[in-house]
Image 1 (cartoon, rainbow, N blue to C red):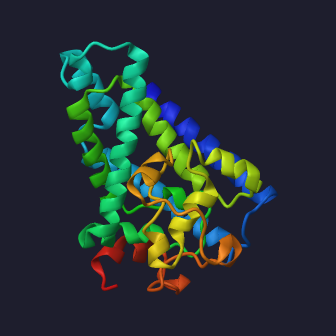
Image 2 (spheres, helix red, strand yellow; image 1 turned 120 degrees about the vertical axis):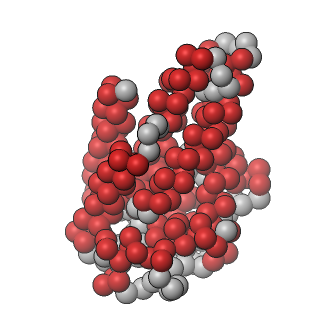
Image 3 (cartoon, rainbow, N blue to C red; image 1 turned 45 degrees about the vertical axis):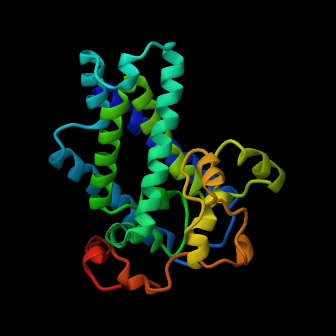
Length: 262
């Protein structure tokens, strides 16, 4: 278990530093707000969320997968398939579950009150990929625990999924410039920053599109894919129209945001 935590932290920090450096060398957009203020707020949420999860949940996805594997519970622990196929299937199924969860967080009012904190960021960069309310994190882990209980994925599949999910979230929120021809090819297989940035548009019809984190196939399959923002990536406004005052987007106010009018 400690090795899993070390692996996750190493990939988290490595992706944060790599994408952060990329943003410095080749930014996609000029940021409007103070990078220092936003980074301190968004990364403070990482610490808060880590502490909340550690002191609230008795078991996490990897631990549950290990128990299920030892007891032979769950669909993939019952059926006979090559191990690598089980790993691939488990990762794809969990990715689909996260896609559907993301859609629900947009369309169910109670869940949106939690998720809108993520969208209230007035800029989008690598740290936005870690900007989630603690209650949303707990619900998300609960959804993953339910999915894992049902499918019984290999332990390595859950480790891979958790590492890739966080790394891809930081990557596709990155304020990084990728040549258009390369982006057009990449988004056939993974969610690129230009694809996901549309999801952070202030326009609701664009906010409610491109829900995928890892692969773009769910958006294409369910008709939620939008190729480009109407105003272009340099002209689009980021965030929510209800939250445009940076002074009201401090750590304390963000944590209280689900319980305030808006």
